[in-house]
Image 1 (tube, one colour):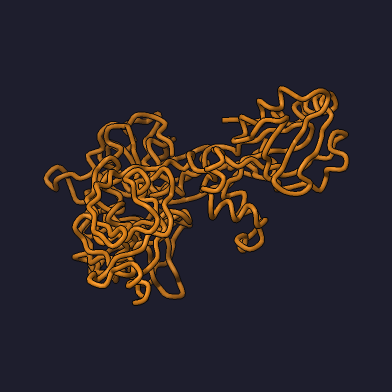
Image 2: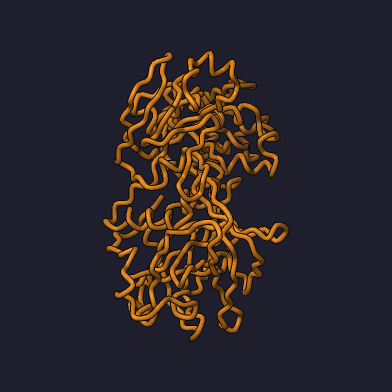
Length: 488
């Protein structure tokens, strides 16, 4: 999560009287051209090859542009372009939330670049049966409008595997023009959401709705973005009658069983425990599948009660069943930042933290690193790393802030015999416990005699590296790579 510069009040929702004219594709949508360059996860001292992405952004009040966060991942250059005149202006990120898949841009030099555009008013009142329009352009700048029909909503992934938000689905054929990555969706010339994916087979579009956009814009108005809160639980359904009897739920209609509490999130801070049963959240009855009745969309996951309307810092009243007795709980909503987790779930706009000692490359484990094992990484990645990702608490209880790996050995005189070592969890370096990459770097500065002593969780358990030889290798690698460590 980053907010490079303070954000002035955007006025996310303006009365219609404040707009000179209704929004239109010609005057309210701009092209966004991005050049991006991520870091190489195998060779973390260098970047991967640059790539480009073309998308569309929705003009907001205050000379800002709304896009999806996917448009600005690892961005090195961002350009706004008016489709009708082809005029261009360099832009920068004002605020971004990769979990919600939203970002706001602004011009950096031509501050009045958007003064002749018409900003959108937001329309958050979607419902099944509504007809909305996806707006885009032909190569020559001609607007293209595609009508699609809203069918339902559900809580699902937007961009990241670990982030679930309300998603609206609409049916109808959408033909992407001019390579556009995301499309603004309008209802009665108001911004109803951003089209983030489309299945040509089923002719179903997924829309990031205006209700989530409004939440994001309100949160960033003061320049101190808190982000969407995390409930921080894993739960099981209570459909089985024997299970319900065991939980003493006989007189209740619903409820879900908390199987796991995630440290650092709202549930843990409120004192919820594994074994509790959630009966209601904010007065809404939770059924045995973990859903509640939304007045417009019907059955929705309970997580929307936490990430829908309330903000981080707000308090929700919930009711639980603990040991067969009902108990009210005040749940203060907090957000656990991604960087505070044992294994970072995503890594944008920065390179992996690493350190090289004598040609041995040490790196903090991240989910993007696990995904290097391919589409079936959940079965192909080393089992110890998968277990750590699924159950980080077993390492957090040992005091580890991050999990440090020996990811590979560069062939050098100091690594002879160690060439095949990889993906080993480091436990100690020179007799000191390793809880993050900074610990490892500091420990490497205080060797025990003439040998670095490195211990791992699994075979070979212990190796030694000559200190003087490692120092000479490090000097040569630094001259070759430019850097041999990134600790922040």
